[in-house]
Length: 196
Image (cartoon, rainbow, N blue to C red; front, side, top):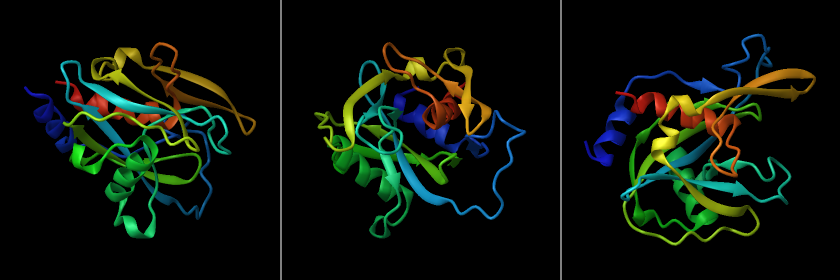
């Protein structure tokens, strides 16, 4: 099976939405919460060793400084939805031209503790590109082999105190990169969908 075929199959598989609260069933969600729509690009480079493109957010950012993330952000009025937001943000954050991206499909949404309804946009990056990190938002652009992220055994459940409560989350470390939280949860969802 080619990479393109595997990604199409993953995008078409049935699945349910996820959230930062999956591993915390006792956590009470605020009633009447309004989620802001966002899109992230789960871009897989089609190369001899397929890999997923990730970023390390700028250490100067107010929210989530230095954390590992998929390129993306909130849906702006001109985006036309999460796919447009993910493609626009990937172009702005890492210099990925839209012409190099083949959108395969959407994965089930993910709700974050910060109030976003994130739609992961699964895509194949077929054309080579030279990443250019946007200095105000991204400190580094790097890749992680898809084989590592597709193996559920590489994911662990960890915890930390958040707003006075112990909160559990997925983590999938790679070398010096600590990939955790919403990013790890979205990647874990992909791993489940890539399983035979």
